[in-house]
Length: 534
Image (tube, rainbow, N blue to C red; front, side, top):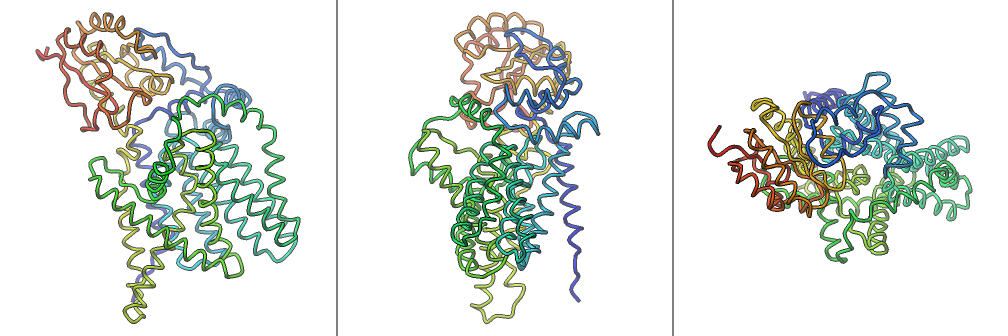
């Protein structure tokens, strides 16, 4: 007799793993900025030169009020404020800090998985356990659950807009249609107030409502677009100003072929990405290729299912329509603005739809295998789906380096090394770059009595800084050079960029040694100790 597992059990286990990961992971740059903007003090970038981390850490104290928080995001940040308002309210109830902010993300991802499960049931989608598992175990969902940023809220709003739009297409009564269409508008407005790049999800969803209004000659389908426009209109002037403040962070468009190659890697990475830092690149690449093929197969099945009437067909069609139109809009924006928007987190908004396509593809593959072998074998029909889910579980790495390019546990590792050597016998050299995230993350994570030397953004001044650093190094036993995220490629050994400073360290009797927790190509920080072991 087969054992039936209640869906609540694996769901609860997954939530516990997310919580474990959130408790174990180190802070990363943008999370520190989240905490600082929720605090009582407005951060002013510390002057170049020697400072004690505790003098920076005070900027995390207290909690700002709601109106001040919104004003800060309107005037000084390039993100809309909805997620940060939620984290602020959570802080009022539970207190501030990184774990509270990450707890909000855990709750939002858990709610998005539940909403996805609910929508699959309401639309009559078969095998909803497979679809929900593929999304819940996707790299996008798992990493967002451990991250004090707004991507978890964006995925929740995207699923809400998707499911409400599908249900609106199948609604049989006018009152029900009115509620669902209004819900689409609210969810899309919430998406735009969460992240500006969510526009590439909003455009295809609301565009579909407009097309339905034209094809069916029903003005009710225009409720969502009109309501979304009215709700977001007050923030449009802020959007226009903020979209002109960060062009230097995006390089020029590299060409159609390079864009396609990048997209073909980032699209399946939303569903499958091995988080173990030492995993072979070949395994990562082939895994993503297989998932991309599953998505293509799923897209074909969604086209076929669109011929069906009702919410199931609409839900499947939108799973293909939204990423297809949205990613095409990304490409158009990249060409028109001459910007290289090839970043993992800008594709994350499509993760629920891409998970649906991947699950549809492996279910189709299972059905094809079953038919080819005579039919009637349930285990064979579900085998490809089980393989994908097992692969996703194996790719998880809760509690260590859930997002490789964001540093994993390296701030925690630095903390342990500084405490072992003694803060007064240690020196941090921090390249703050053009932002403040590295400085804030160090101030939040590391012992407050640790001396830190902040480098100026312009490397031309580093020769003079090297003279100061050489003098400071004479009385230290441990020096950690902390890199900014902007300097050089993430795969490069960034220590090679700091010639005058490295010469000063060598003259002071220091040699470079392995920087735990392991070789990451010198991407995050480098460690220097006295060659005479004193």
